[in-house]
Length: 250
Figure 1: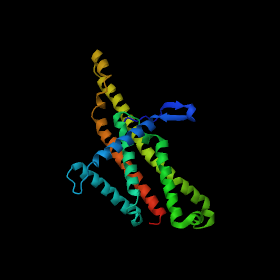
Figure 2: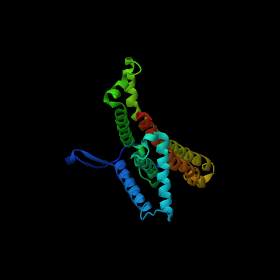
Figure 3: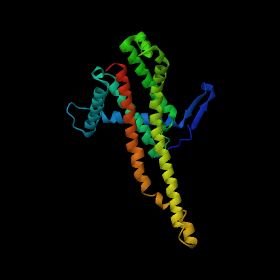
Figure 4: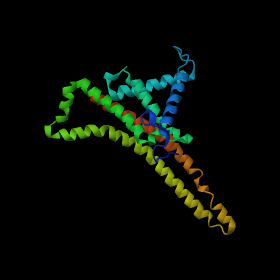
């Protein structure tokens, strides 16, 4: 997984526009969103009542899968609601942003501000559904339950929800990057040590070739770049559905 975790790289800064800063994470996110829009347009073009094309079958399968997830995790009160496209878009964007590292780009999910932005949106939806279910006074009263002295802890718990979602997603993506980097470095040292045992000038030359870096990193890439990306997107969306469904009392 080729991800730079040194921080957001600033591509453009325009003080005249209120200090607007364009980072690599923002650019990659826009590119991923554009690709997803074009992909959706392609998959749903000229749809028929009875699917004749594989792309329509795949599109309907994807929508049905998301619908089943929403029905199972959020409860019957959210069936047929706009949360189906929201959860689908959130999953696709999260997975797409993580997989972008395969193409040498900075994965936006390795930027804390990106995942925090998603978590804030989810937190707003959680709060909205709590107020909708119990009213504004009921929402405030919830902070005093089961006893009034628990109010500070309940407030901290409320704030901790988006923070925990953020650091869980961000931490898992970055941990894969760190593990891969350590393995690459270790294999490089191992190559140098083993090939350096060859005597003479030949050993000095071939010891500079990290031959042990071929093979194993590619297998690890299948896990960290693909499986882990989809898994973290699934977990983030599942937590979103559970929290929102719980806020609405489902």
